[in-house]
Image (tube, rainbow, N blue to C red; front, side, top):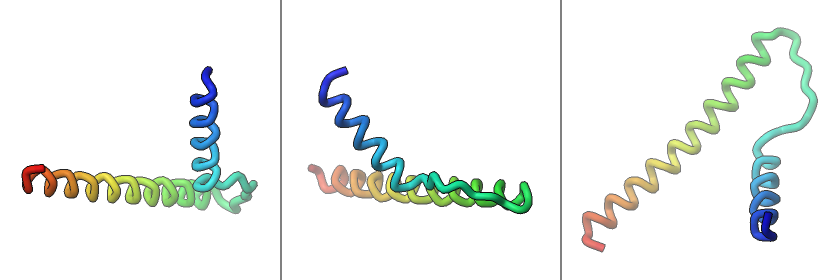
Length: 67
């Protein structure tokens, strides 16, 4: 791998570390773990989808202006 690839991989790992908690957690019930996992996945999905929609609207407006 090149030096640039190594730097990109380190940045990706740092970004992932910001969003993924490595804390050991113990849930009393299996349902609690499933709900927590589902909720975090849903939240991440909403954030990513919102960013994509904003970018799509931005690009559409640029194209409609004629740029």
